[in-house]
Length: 581
Image (cartoon, one colour):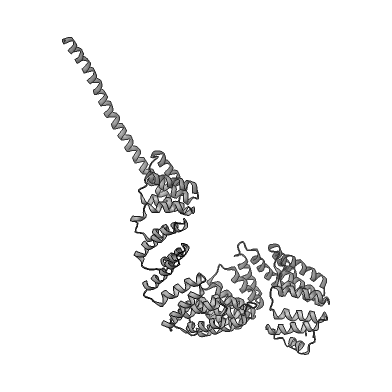
């Protein structure tokens, strides 16, 4: 018994000894393990911090490398996956951006920002069903209206119309009846086939905005956009009956009438609206700008449009006398009417009021070029260059003006300076070279002129002025066949060129090839249908081809389109061709 107790005691001591060593070993291991974790965590935080710094300064590739090191240290850290998703999206790797966004979300689905990142990526990929599913998990507690709008759009685009309407109703509780919400609900109810609910939305919108005319006009615009002109006009007429001095209603009614081709009624309402001081000038000029293209020659009813739009400009002239945009737009109107003298007056006022309008300066220079006011053109060009020193087109226009003023040294300076500013624009570069050549020809430096003409064509073969000038020089030396060859070569590069086709017709007239000349003038007119000068030349070719009646008819068209030549009037009155004097 004693032996056994001793034996047990011996073994117990041995076990306790071993256990003691074991406890000691475990304790040391735990201390070592805790130390390693602390060291590793400290290293992770350092690298994570460095990665964020690299990301902040735009070093995305460096940031990716550092965040990937973080991931190797803590594979399931959702913040690392979130950061990598953002970085891969920034560097254009869409698949990895999606992969890490999905990983971050799966690791921490309760985190709103991880959910939103994944939803954002699905939205960008047009996967609106998944976007909506993700938003649905966070939207109940969400206060951000913009997120609710995005969620609504995802619902709409994934075909969940009823849910979208419910979400818009929730938004409307916070915003009140707004056009964005009410009109979207109107469209959604129509998509569901519920016309009554759709109309109720518009009634609710108008009543929610105090039955104000502004709200009714917005609804009328909605009807017009949906091509429901009857409902739109009915509502506008209601506004006019209730608020006869509300100018916007007349503008709206004019829009409806224009769409119905009721031009006289439209302009009557426009005049009422334009006389109303409550309508902002910006709105009036926007309307004029939108209508101006319809004054172009050849447009349907362009003569009536010109007359009536001119009246509208006059109505607001006092209100707009200090508005540069108005004067610039009015200048454009006069250009359409081919009255560059009036255009110059308007453009000059525009740049005086707002010297920072580059377009107004360019329009001014072009119109002064058209009326050959090269003195003022040069002065304005130099002023424009001081304001916009990096715009080569201004140097070109100023160089042309100086050339026409025979200030050749100054012209050469402007043309060279501008040419060196041109970047990746061969046609513009070629224009500079053409004018350098033309300037040298004018000074009798024919070899220099040829050098620049050749350079112009080497830069851009479609520079029609080079072919036209060379042909003109040859024609003056009675080398008609050589001039013809030059023109035909130019037409291979610019077959629709008005200048080259017109000049071809002139050469053919000199060669007494009247039928061919007629065809050339017709080609020129194809791109400038109402050019009075070319119409006169066409009439000449027809007369000399034996088609007297046709010729007289075309001469009459030339007069109608602004050709005021006394010789043309004589030809038309006498029904007889007279050669140029």
